Structure formats: C-alpha cells, structure tokens
Image (cartoon, rainbow, N blue to C red; front, side, top):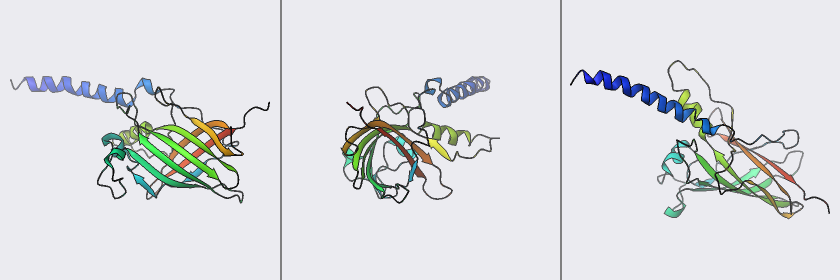
Length: 218
C-alpha cells in the first residue's frame, strides 16, 4: 500500500500543473480585448476612487462576492456585490473637471475556467456647462491575477506592470459603449476604455478614456 503513494503522487502533480497552466494560459481568453483608443485623439484621464461605498475593488472580492466586514460595505445584503462612488475627472487646459458617478457590479459569469473575473461598470458623467453622457463597460481583472500568480513562482523575479488594460468584450447579452444624454453630447455615441494604474504605494489609481462622436449631419 505504501508503494502506491509515490505512484499516485507522480500522477497527481503533472495533472495539477497541467490544470493550472490551462487556467492561467487559457486559449479562450485571446482576442477579448478591444483595441485601445488613440491617445492623440482621446487623452486618458487618471483618477482615484478613494471615496466609494460597497465591495472593495480587489481580487478577493471578485472571488468571494463581497467583504461584508469592510467599513465601507453597503448595509443592504442585496447590494453586497455593488460598488458606487463619485469620481472627479480632470479636463486639463484650464477647463473645469467633469463630475461622474460610477457604479460597478460583479458579473455573475465570473469563472476561473472561463478566465473571467469581471465587473460591469456604469458611468454618468457631467461636464459643467457642456452636457452629460452615459457609459457602460465590462472590466476583466484576469490579467492582473495572471501576473500576480506568475510572480509567486520560484525563479521568476518579475514586477507588476505599471498599467493593466481592463476593458474587455462583455459576456453575451451585455453591451458596452457611450451614449450622449444631454447638452452638446445629446445623440453622441462612442466607446469606453478603462485601465488600472499600479501605484508605488497605497491604493492603485485608475485611467479612463472615452470617445464620443456626434451623430451624422442630415
């Protein structure tokens, strides 16, 4: 009986390694990232989301669903998988900043085997004196998990990437994009991109790009 343990272990370890490798380098994840918006046409807006309520934006929450013990957790159990915050988006060039409300909710389709650790993100952005837009996107944190796991392996002395593009193609039945709501942006349609900025210390920051195009002239 004792001689069977080494044989069973020898067969188990390759299977575990193969399963881990398949999860981390899942071929189904290729091609799910939309092309980045041109920086010369759509400048990135960096922001922080320190003042928010709801689930913490970390990998543990993406696995467990929410951390009810957090000080900023929403009291209602029905909102356990929700995060809401007010964001200030700097405009630059002496223009007033935009004020936004961002709501994120965990995707029910999150799965390690599908390489999906995502949130659905909904924006309402208002530019003083100009107008407002609604935007919806899907963020997949899978590349961040891949990088952190690989850096734990022996012999790999890697560093976290400075920027992680999060925007991905949403699961079936969900849409992503920008829709003009009021003011000069009424009727506009466009695209949205989000990235995670890894800060040297403290909580990471975020980056947002929006492209809104006017409707065709009739």
